[in-house]
Image (cartoon, rainbow, N blue to C red; front, side, top):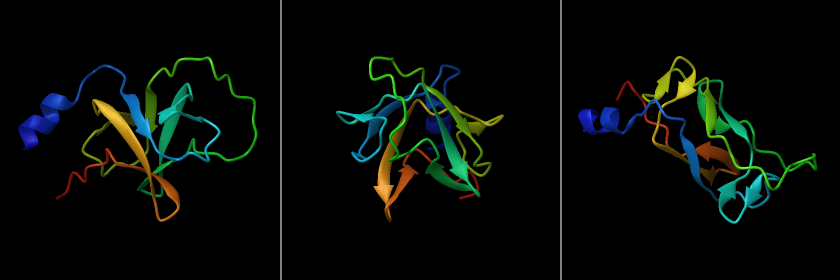
Length: 106
């Protein structure tokens, strides 16, 4: 299992493959249109880019896939960057939770 996880970790930028938070201003048809996202709040893998406030959002931009991650205990975090093959963001207890998180200490 560990070898497969590490094989899946790439030097490429991860993509937000799916987001189910329809109330987010970056949401569009199950995808995130933010150019970059940031994950991690007090070691909890929450999407900090999630916002319901009206801001100027370029709906035509393609996401770059840059994922900054401050969750040090995530196996896929390398030097504060996510190295997962892709990112899934889903609602958990009313918050935007990174489903690609894997605890490196389990």
